[in-house]
Image 1 (tube, rainbow, N blue to C red):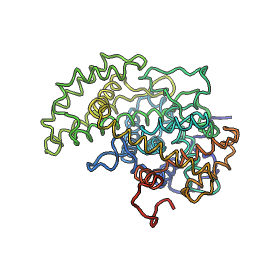
Image 2: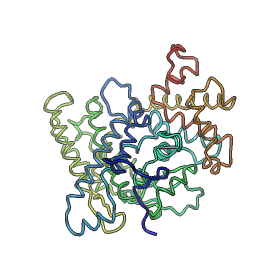
Image 3: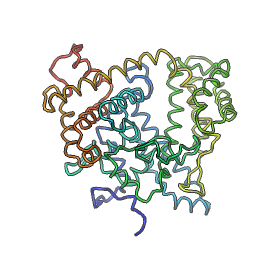
Image 4: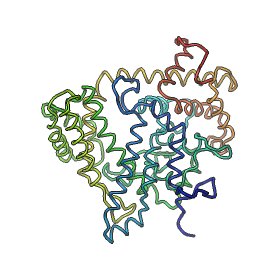
Amino acid sequence: MGKPRKWKRRHEKSENDPFRTPYQRDRDRVLYSSAFRRLSGVAQVAAVNEQRVLHNRLTHSLKVAQLGRRLVQHLKQDDSAEAQEFRKNSGVKADVVETAGLVHDIGHPPFGHVSEPVLDACLRRATGLEGFEGNAQSFRIVTKLARRRTEYAGLDLTRAALDAMLKYPRPRPRSADDPFTAPTWTDRRFGSKWGAYASELEDFRWARKGATGSLRSANAILMDWADDITYATHDIEDYFRAGLIPLHDLVSDRDRIARHARRRLGKLPDFEPALFDAGLDKVISRFRQITSSCWDTRQNRSAMNVITTVNITDCVNAVSFAADPPHIAVDARCQYLVEALKELTWYYVIDKPSLAVMQEGQKRIVQSLYDRLRDCLTESPKSPRLPIQLRSIYRELGRDPDFDSAYQGSAEAREARAVVDYICVLTEAQAVDLDERLSGRSHGSMFGAWFS
């Protein structure tokens, strides 16, 4: 038998499209899905209802997809015989990396990362399941929850697209004896987390057919690097614009930023403070073009565009072909540069009381929503108090042999997973509104309710 055909789909057996490749069809399926549109209502760091124009999960995903395509185009500029050989072995495809960029955050719950530990604790406390993981939820959405046909679940993306979205290509370890060893943090070939629930193991195995252990695909490495670059650059623009990051005067905080980074990153395997400091100094040097704290001056806006272009160009040029599978390498010094960029957001925004207090309230909303919906579902799966989509998710779980096999038909597992799945298809505004209605704090009426 030959290698698995990466353009194959698990459910559809033929491709009847005269003008689109299978990978282009993948991209179109994602763009036209409601799960993708929902990301416009999910925060990147701050809430999406801020008056300032900040990035949300949708604009972030679009930029990751665009940059992923540019990384492939950069690699294809190398026309040496060695590069041609590596290109043939790695299987990098612009359309595949772009699609992976579009879907990599599609499973993020309302309020982003702040909700993940809440949902994780809910699942563990209720049933002893493997808990919650945003990347595994993204994989679950495209393989099970999203719908485009009645004959099968999911978007039925190609094997290549599914493999490319797996930043962490392994299921959650079932015991402490799991043989996986966390890689050094600059080794892009592996990820330190996990990316598939037990209920999607068959889809996971199908997507990973022909892959080697927990080794990422070349396309997944490019998507993951595009994600890092995008997050590092656009958050700085957002929070400078909001007056939170003083790009015009980073020098005075330089040593405090470096110490903060050592506390945050010092536990990473093989983290080298000297390389981080060199990256930080380069970042500070570049931002000296910013002359004041005001975003809206012509000079500052122009300087910001120039600096972002230089940073992104450096990061694109840091990618090259490598001799060992999966044949993609990212220069370590540039990875430290990106971490230095990220550190500005961590130091000035994420680790500040104003955001922490807001996130505490967001956690309480998610916890309250889970508890109330779970109580309603336990009382009666047919209760009119349950949103229609939650009832549908619960019903479909009862028809899913993969879920039944993974959790031995547990009623508790089914209830908990249904509620978590439902929360993860809500925007933040929907989550807040539904929690207010369920708790009796809403001033809205029954007319025009979005969940009925």
